[in-house]
Image 1: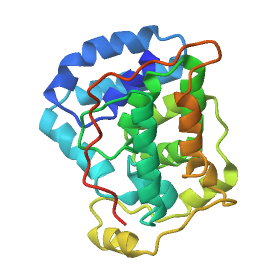
Image 2: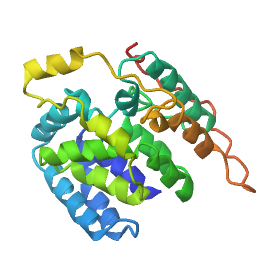
Image 3: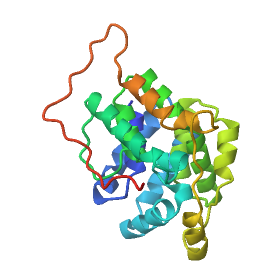
Image 4: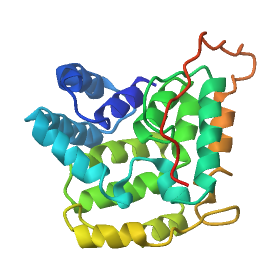
Length: 248
């Protein structure tokens, strides 16, 4: 799904290469049949925002996504927090990528949302849409928090919810929205939020469908070929995802 690749690019750290590609990205969004008109307009606003001063846009991005746990772009951060389960979930997700022949060369952790969307963009349409349905409550929580800050990045998460046509689990969403959501310039609140004991999710919990028991299982299913379709052979040599490892 090309639109998932586009959304992945828009959600990545702003660079000169991204700015150069913005006109082409705008064209792809304007003609995509799966997006609502409202989504196209909102994404156009994000593109306008990204077309401004690059250093300002990089600073905004860092303040939003790198300083607060509540707006982390790492999916398992919202599911496992700092628990040991997150490490195993990372290992499982790397294996899923590799088994599907997806060989990203990036220093990002495998649950980084732009990377996850890039992987989903390579799947057949139905498998891709089923996959992005799984973390719907995480996407909804991020959309709400970005809306509170009047951030144009909200458009990406609204578009993903449109594409997935998912209704987030109400209990899981409420649990996420109840967590601390400090402003990135409130250093005292940030310290308090990071010091809080993590909420552990497991089988039977409201968020389990997006955890190791649910999301990774769906990823495994998504990596399998449809009936009657021969599985793609991974390219060789395969490049493993390199990362600094999960915080355990």
